[in-house]
Length: 481
Image (cartoon, rainbow, N blue to C red; front, side, top):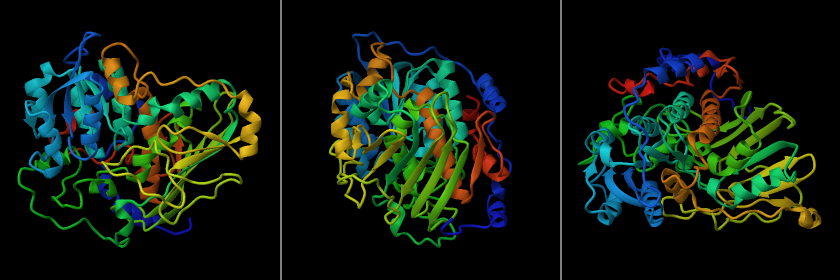
């Protein structure tokens, strides 16, 4: 590594508090699924009707998702849920739906109104996705949840198993899965234009919240008074207890390992999703953090380079993905790359456009025959250099248009008129790749992963992080899917 992070002994000492956590295995997932109670059949909505949807998390990103779902004309908003209902950032959605009952605790909402709710939108901090989704799915309620799917490998595994058990419609909010890049990648792959891929570079080098923070942080922030009207206990969910701090709230949670998935979890799904699905990558065999700058055990590094190694699959060769993030960690691009511009198709981030960087969010795909470049979300691929693209022009297949955007695709699937394009069966393995990357960031060590047993084989403590810390008292039931 370019910058040594933490000694093996120090890592084991600092991670000792997690020693009671279970590791992920097929037997654990099977036992959890068998223990879970199926309390309701999947909600059925007539194809000509509208979906009655509950919004869980209605500020910042949740506000944007709520507007997009409502704009489809396919749903009625019947309930609002947010732990901070008196805050400024939740007032716009409250004003949009003044007749919808309001709740600060999703459990109370589902208890009181579960029979009136067909589907739920979940746009809360990463660590809280899992229990909200499980609570809904058990009741036969269909679920749309923002990426990343969950914060731990086991949570992703349990959500995938619950989707199968409860038979509900699910969708993870990686919008590019319903836009041009999705259909182009599939068409080019089916036509043999994208084949024999051996390497992919993914990068997100724009500023993040933690880039100006002190890299020598030695603890969590000091406790602050809980804001009036905020349900801090519900915000914490199943994660370990923490005193309230504004450095956890309003998006700051993404900085902290205990709550968020960093830039990899935030942007990885928007950049690498089509590569992962259509090249049938599954899970890696090795994850190597080759560069970590400003590392500590509390919040994410200022810069990261992480290598993921995937084995050969059928007639497809082994493939390496190298991920770069950080303002000063710009990957090299191939000759003939051209200009790096912000793609106008990239949506707003909590209402604000992403700012330009030296190299903007995207990917380069290297095959034995061709090299491709692409941006993020639904942005299409280009063949590079330009003269090679011109030579391939007449050989490229026609790409079908998307029949619906990602939000409409979910609601139309609940109505039985389409199938979801990013259900948990597809988005869970993708999210698990990012969970493994985050564990490698936290440990600062190369990890070897057994795809058959879902175990990290060379680092027992990292293996326990697949499960994460034991849930807070009262939240254990959600791990019995």
